[in-house]
Image: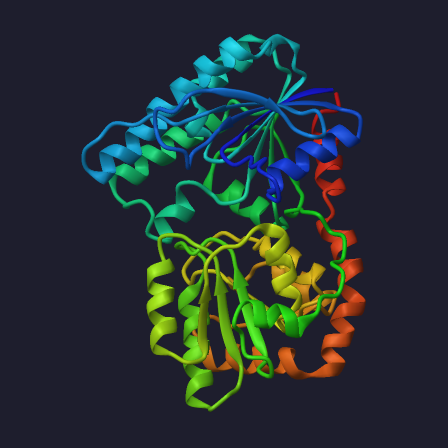
Amino acid sequence: MRLLMVAMQFPVEPGQSYLTTELADALVAAGHEVEVLHLDWSAAPGGPTRTFFTDSGVRVVRCAPRTLGGPALLRNASKFVLSGRHAARVAWRHFDLESFDALIAWMPAMAIAPLLPLIRRARVRHRLLFIWDFFPDHHREIGRIPGGLPFRIAWWWEQREMNRFTAIVCTLPGNEAYLRAHYRVRPDQRVLVTPVWADTKPLPPVDSAAIRRQYDLQSDAPIAVFGGQLVEGRGFDQMLGAAEAGHAAGSPLRYLFVGDGRLAPMIRDRAARATNVLYRPPVPRADYLKLLGACDVGMVATVPGVTSFSIPSKTIDYLRAGLPVVAAVEHGSDFPAILEGYRVGRTVSFNDPGGFHRTAELLSTDTAIREEVRTNAPRCLDEVFDVRHAVATIEAATRP
């Protein structure tokens, strides 16, 4: 098949990768042709359009967003409207749309709304929408967009664009139920489920002492690590609450946060005031993976009150490094069944900082548990998170 992928994140700089790049490479390896329209949401508005090829032969056309000035609400709303129009013009000029068998895109679909009629007029038969976070529900629940009229407009608009897709792909079985309860799904739309994916090859051992010296980390203290974007929706209240509980208990466990984002100043401030909280700025991915190998337990958390479910993709890197995972996630999520079913981690309740800390401390120091995780992690990665499952899902969704 010839596949057109439209994504807001598609890094190709040396040492960087993302779920979208890994999926494109896996589709090429499976014998498909892939081209990518990269609407680079994080780029400075108004930038030029560029075309290049990846090492696997994927042609990528990258364009910058468009927006108006003024208050934040106007900037954000205009970014969706103007960027989508610009992406549609770029697609019309740079791609032979009628040559594609399928479109792959991600929610929010409204970000590329003007492109979707072009796709239908080009008779692209299969149109797949991946949902990692439900827009706008999830964004309202974590405080990224206001409720009331702005939310209702965003929901109506997103629902209209969802109707243009032939298949919708969720990350967990529970999210299929959420989709059907909160959105309208046409009888002829296929709904499929595949977890998030990434490179699942186990990481080689590292010289832990040398890595810790490199990043000025204490050599003899267990370390719980969080790596990734320091933004809303990552559950920092849960993890920092656990750090406070550990400090009160006199625990040697250190809480390390690696990354950047809107909440980085808050994390840096906490690290300046609490001896057991550490902050390090982002590093190249290869170096980050080595840093994980010098830590003892990986942390993930989501946000209380969020009604849809997610699998934090950083879980995969933790397991590749052989780290047990401690997670505070939504009640009813399928994610705990994966961690605990494969015996690679444990989950705790929301708003239980003491429980999160005690679990993190146990996972970071119990040698029997850590050996069990190192044994079980490769099977979990292969059977749940390997990108081949996403490729198979796409192939299933595009069969007659």
